[in-house]
Image 1: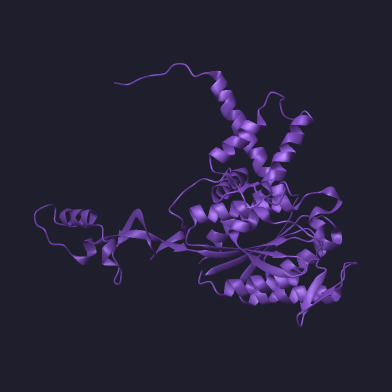
Image 2: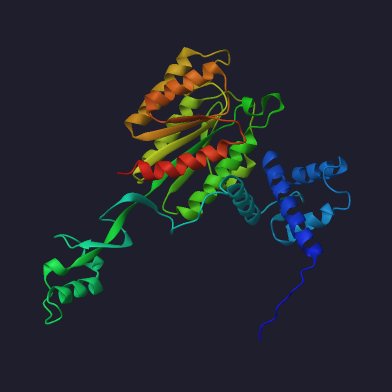
Length: 363
């Protein structure tokens, strides 16, 4: 027996929509708070006091629902913190925010737009050629060819009757996302670190769910560059650091050298000029203007990446002509790509370039 429900309480719909909106606000505030759930909750209460959220909205009930869903749990200090499930939810939310226009397809491979010997079988067939894998033989079509050739009077299967399924090349890619955590990422009250983290989270969700054969690493660079685990992305925060772009490229290049994927690339997300470099374990800093000593060291690293076939895609969150000229020079040396964007369309550019790069660079 089938039961049909012709009425759905509008209050239920309103509550679902309200919860979804609150979830998005909470996720964004958690990122802005460097993963501090308690701080995000306090900010939501302040937003409600300022009239940006309805007075009758029960925030405490919403916070309790997060705990019930095991997104939050008390830590050793008795304060609520994100669980691994909460971190996954934030990562998925970032993906939906940035990659909402991406169509899901395939089991996690990158097809090349050319037929040939590969791993993924296509519905199209072609005549058999010596050396083709016999497992790709289309038995039904081969039999039809034989019967057609003999007008159905006899069965004599010859090599000219054989057809095999076309296959397409599959490839994979290793990517390092290098995030600038220098002081300029939060300078003058403009939050640029949160969009950068959102992009890194979205890339993590994209690669782990749709391209599982790929490798993704994340490094942070301020005075020094360091590798961080993917689970730490929500907790990234900018600090009183300079911008050691040269070491970021050097470390990224070293990490990519360990990977077997044929395509290797660096996504460099920054908003300022290189102002530091590492020499013999010591940090040389100069925050004033473009120091040619630092600039040349950075360009040398860009060239080293090119020689190791590592493509650098720079996303510069700035429009200063001097910085633009530097990025264009670095891009020309590396033969990479550069985009100049605000924090609000950064993810869209990364999506477009990431998908195109996978399909165009593989021969």
